[in-house]
Image (cartoon, rainbow, N blue to C red; front, side, top):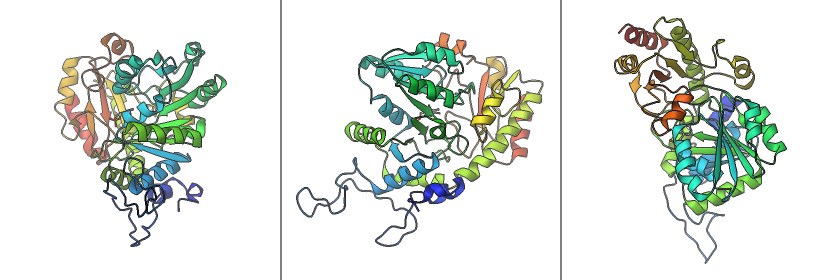
Length: 387
Ligand SMILES: *Cc1c(COP(=O)(O)O)cnc(C)c1O
């Protein structure tokens, strides 16, 4: 179905795109090609096409890549060993002296990689609040090659206007990368809005079962795809065949899971907003969200990610350590509910002054609302809020 897959709607693509019956046996499911190399009947002539070595080519991985390309309305997918490896490959297209503008409130590990690894290699980074188009525009320099944003951001749920920023980037010969991990391709497709790269930590919603670390990129431009394949082959951050298989299997229920994540996220956000012991709820699906209009325009749903401010570390601990359905853990986007204290956990590596300036205080709690029964989830939250 890969040829015509863009004619189908999202749920059909989630199940079928990239997945062809295996030609030798007719197996309906893509086999796990757990091999590091392939036989060559004659010198320099692999038995089949480009299959010469597992780092360069693997059929299970290619099926996953065709799937994410279709789901993100792209033409090519590129799979990596982790979300950070995927993002690193995008930045590795640049050279020493080139400049990147990044949203300031990205995933903590993104900031760490930019500040402590890639900046040592001579790539320059400027951080901006990408809600503010003027600020993004003012940060552009003659050597700016890439703008990197996350929307919604982690954990402040800020949005940025993908279409407007892509126009700004292109008017200045720069490319736009959107980290689409928080939204998932079901809720938001940045390539349709003009972005050049959309990337995922597929560890989160895309795989959805908290059992794989992985990264995926989708692009439309064949030259960008070639660059990424070349960088991956040269640098080596490939995912294993088993992980590709598991992620493909997770994707088959992406649309069904996201419908429930969206419903549960909305109900939790509304419940917490009405609750007297919660100071503030950050969720793009609430009309109180300062970018609610942009959210409705740019997204089809608002996910299960909900952040709240409960004021103090003492209250944060009372809340997060006594929940029964929500486990206290890093990560997000799995079928099970998780809760996290960004200032002390996921964003611990962000310098404290920058953290405070962005509102990531010890009173901030981030929920990844799973797809359990909503009555149980709300009862769990209600109980701990009484403590
Ligand atoms: C988790 C995460 C990453 C990093 O992905 P890994 O798979 O852990 O390397 C990047 N961006 C966002 C938004 C994330 O949540």
